[in-house]
Image (cartoon, rainbow, N blue to C red; front, top):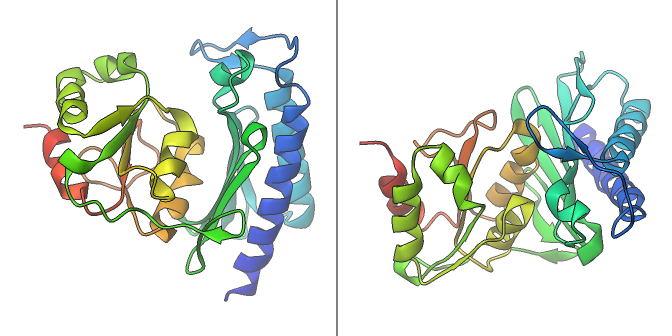
Length: 257
């Protein structure tokens, strides 16, 4: 295994868990909420967790780039870039809902090679390095073997996002065609798909830091990441992850006519 990849991956897991524990100290407490220009909430926990990630990772790898949701982009010269979301699911965080996570993705020469997702309130860590498999804790995870949408469990975010995309009818058709649908948004639906607890997660309104860690995790678990038209870009607002076996059937419903 590439030693540069491995050393960064190991540090990513350690640092993501540290940042998650920092944020956890503010969870279910009387924390002040600020509202950003896009009407999304932010707290001191978001900012402090991202500062910890940035300072710790760049102290060890000073020539790497770094992109975070709260503090922006720092170019690097090594070919590596860290892409982080200190609290994915801040709306849950501020309402004392334990489904929120710290996300750390590692990019090398434009390709996502590692992802770490820590859910401190759930006491769970998911992680993956390209070529090494995907894990929840020390247990290796795989996507499910379900082959049809009719047999599938589908995860999705709020329906208002699909209305904003002008695709609400298609999404409702998709959900109606599944065996079960569950509104587990943010990182959690992606991780449930990666560990085989469902067959697909569909999202809209995401940013690069929301999915950078997700792509290598789902792929190392044997699944697929895509935009709704079949591309595989992490810098677009539309995405799905699937177990791979229902991928084409789902894309057929989502592709514009």
